[in-house]
Every structure is written in structure tokens, then in C-alpha cells.
Length: 162
Image 1 (cartoon, rainbow, N blue to C red):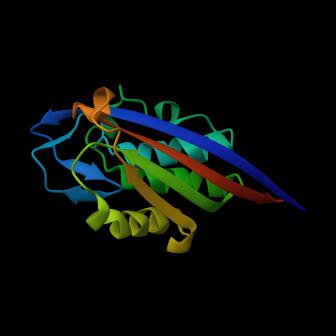
Image 2 (tube, rainbow, N blue to C red):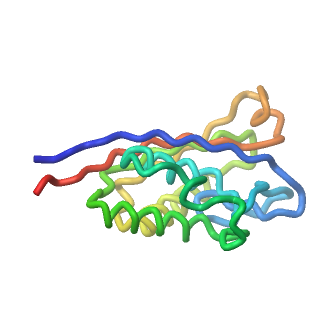
Image 3 (cartoon, rainbow, N blue to C red):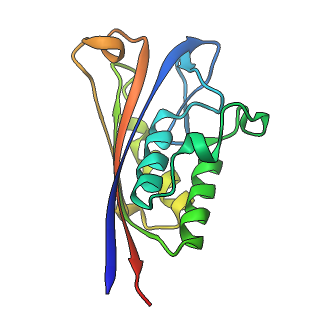
């Protein structure tokens, strides 16, 4: 018998000058980056929260608190690998992840495949199990005016009953 669960993740970060823009583990050349304690990878943060939520294992703030300097400027790919490890220890496997970046610019289409590869590798799954999409908000709100980016993710996980 298989136990399936769905989780949803959401994250948002302010854009700031002088920071690297890292989305989906890809360093994208651009004039601003996302502000945060880690590398502020908004897409991977949403993915991690979706996975942790599905497994009822809390959220990234509980696992990787921003008051802990051990996580200062850490790669979110490294954090995603740790989430995958925690899930595996609890017997959970990723079925699929569907993530959406919300940003007016830059265009991320040229980086989408690399993002999918990074997520799949960190989770130990095939890239066909990972979807990454992007959308704008037609210049509305904080993502539309370029002051920040947001991301949503949905994850389906399974646990085989022994």
C-alpha cells in the first residue's frame, strides 16, 4: 500500500543591489539579487517548504533558522539536499515537484533546464519529475514593479507501507 501526500510551498524575497541573483540553483547575471540570510533562492525555498509540508516535517525556518550563522549565505541547493536526506530518513520519496517563479524580469526561460536539473539532482530523482515555470504579474504588485520575487511549489511524495 502506498501513502501519497501533497504539500504546497510559498516564498518571497526582496530584490537588492549588490547581491547575486540565484534562482533554482542557477546564478543568473542581473543588476540585482534576492536579499536573505542564505543565498535567498526563492524558488528552492518554495520547493523545500512544499516537500517539508507534504511530509509534515515543519518548514525551512524551523530546519534552517535565519538566526543561525551556519546558514549565512549558504547555497539553497545544499539546503535542498539536506531536506531530501531528512525525508529519506523518514521513508518519503519524491513523486514530482511543480514550481512557479513569479517575477517581472529577468526572463528565466534560458535557465529553466538547468534549474530542473539542479532540483532533480539535489532530490535524487529524474528530471522528468521536476517542472519549473515562470510568470509575470503584468506589472502589478511587488513582483510586477520589480521590488521582489515570489515562488509557489507543489510536491507529491509517497511512502511505502511496510
